[in-house]
Length: 184
Image 1 (cartoon, one colour):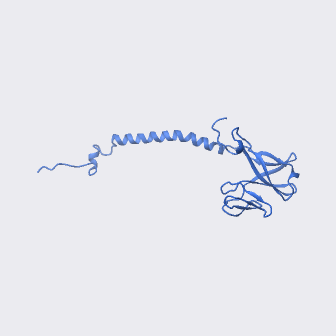
Image 2 (cartoon, helix red, strand yellow):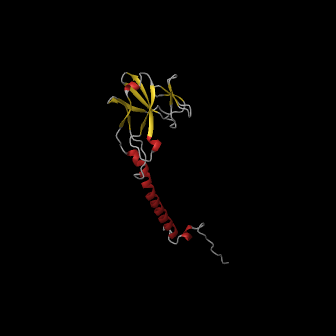
Image 3 (cartoon, one colour):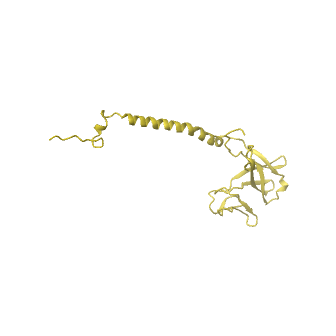
């Protein structure tokens, strides 16, 4: 009796490759296609990532913003002051403006806190009677020194540098990193 050979590549790998150890043309083309696709993806991704990360890596100098004369801040009070980003772009509009809480601790000693909660960035308000900063979004509460009292904030309120120069209370700010895709 004549038995027919019915071997398939699944049953016998030698049938799939006439020369063991060599890739088929299909395997080779697949590897070349994947390699070229990877190179194309990298060619697109590198400039995009660079444009997004570069502003964060720039070391911009601190800029001092005048926020008022020392006599505008009675000792023991906490006051909201507003100022503009140190390096605003023409199109920035309202986003170029920011604020800080300034407290006059003692004669000539000031402290300044960010207005943004460290949980999700909501603006905190100063409650003078309770002597607490309170975040209305998720119940974050900070003591008068900016440390966390309760709620979800993971860390204290950020502080700004403060000095008195040229008869003004000044807050030290750095430009907010904004990605510049063009000069406009």
